[in-house]
Length: 324
Image (tube, rainbow, N blue to C red; front, side):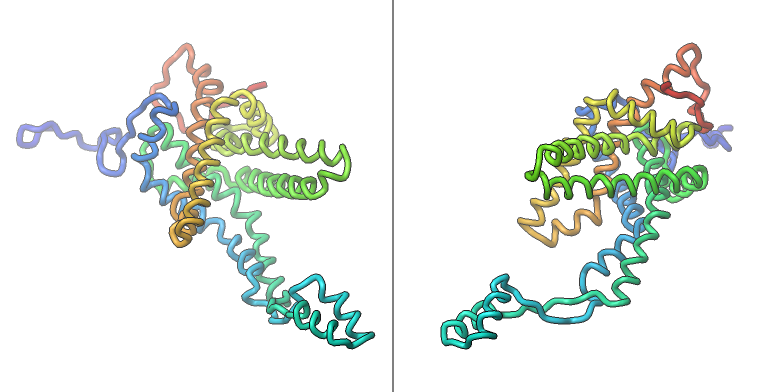
């Protein structure tokens, strides 16, 4: 209908307007990454807030490790305390007394108590929040890359409700295996000089951790886009980790660069550096992963599905397709 000579379309839910503006499409390459990043900066800050607040059990672990709620005590600050104490116990001489005055200094510290273990133990709740937070934020980030209209709060909970069971299971697998990878790297790094086997295991653990790191680019995106079992999600993610090597490698460079920038800011001006993780760091790294992964998923798993016919609209129903 026309009002004052202007065409007005009532009940047109496809029309662009405030809150439903469709982002401009373009090639998902490095040249356009910074343009996409700048256009979505404020939304990425909101996504980062979802990640921080959604994974709140981490703060219980940090509080337990901080020593704030522990019992105050004193420990010897020098490794020479024990032999000097043994000498002065059996023979008190001026020289021993002088050495004990130097190496017998004590430092204040805290010991864990019952409350420390209780507070730190609450961090186990991360097993139940980690997958859901990744599910909701990945859905938002995927839509950013696609150029779809985004409703931050509604989209976040929509993705979680739609993938309630798989989101939790995949999150538990992701968190546990990620912790195992980190532990293996630390363990074999500390024992790498013992034998050739430990040296091999150190480099093998790094390779497995990197492969898993790239698989994580795809796992949650595949889960929220397709109707596949957990096994097939992991299998396809492994295939994409190798198939999309170039994009994965570039995203990894970007994530490493972001970590170095944050660390550098901490060294130059600590208050600014320490606030970066709470403002942008996690969402920025996740956006790089989505920007690298979704175009490859679309090329391999979505585009062939519509090779012979163009879809009328972007489907919300999952596509039954597998890489093998």
